[in-house]
Length: 399
Ligand code: AMP
Ligand code: MG
Image (cartoon, rainbow, N blue to C red):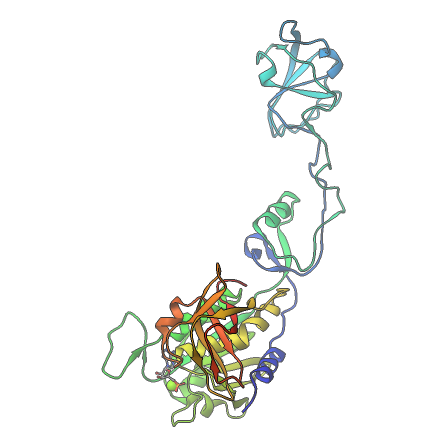
């Protein structure tokens, strides 16, 4: 049997990043910048007012107080967005709004609250320090400065900065495009009637969601019956659009193992020393990597967590692609099959760092997985764990 570590390496070696791509800002959220971003212009782009008020020469109102106001004629009205260049003559004021360009010659802005708000003339009740309430060109960003670094995750604020700098696109490590395929002649799409012996298909929606949750793009998530031709047809229909193909089912030791039957030449089918998730496969169809997961829903999702999620995120430039792992205190006795790495579903109490397993170990107990918040990782050589011992947990709520 292949070790979990070896199969992780085999899968990781298959998954590669796509070349960097410029994307419209709206599509870049959450992706990783492929290069540094230099500011093409300064921010603010021009001296502008930080307040609604009056642009003045500070010296003209040096004597202004509540009792002895200074009255100036209002020579211009400057709303935000005015594009002509204005000059303030000494001894006059311009009414100005927040964000509007400060006229040349003005040395301060007096807030409207310190005036009578006049339109033709204005009575000013307080002196102003030179430079007061003027946002200077370039005081936030100087043109040419590196404002975002390669490897940074694009956040809403990074998008805001890029837009403020006039950039319509950011060059990012693109999403991995993933084809998710489930197989099984017993499978029926949710929302349609069931015949006896049929079950609802659940892996496609689950793994597609896991791919999206990891930042990937799902090309399609079709299902096929256990028919080699139908399987290969569906595969070839989508495979060229995908950077990675994930299948579920049809890889065990029985008859009608459609994935095994169809891909014997391209995929290396192996047994991995783990529970759940023993039957696995990895290979390439043409240039496209394909990972074949077992069909039991718990096996499929745990296998995705153990083998695919980290390299998928790494291929999208994520610096810390793994789920956070840590030691927690086990609150019960547990047994584990000797010779296999066991991944139990668990509930971790982060307040006390204690954990209990959640549900039986068998791989069809999806209900428990749905409400677990961690995986317990129990080493191959461990057969028994007693309450109070340390166990490794993967925090599924983070990373
Ligand atoms: P297989 O790996 O194809 O032998 O499937 C193992 C078990 O998982 C069987 O009980 C299947 O019915 C079940 N199974 C396989 N694929 C799916 C799926 N997409 N959705 C729900 N159950 C599945
Ligand atoms: Mg099957």
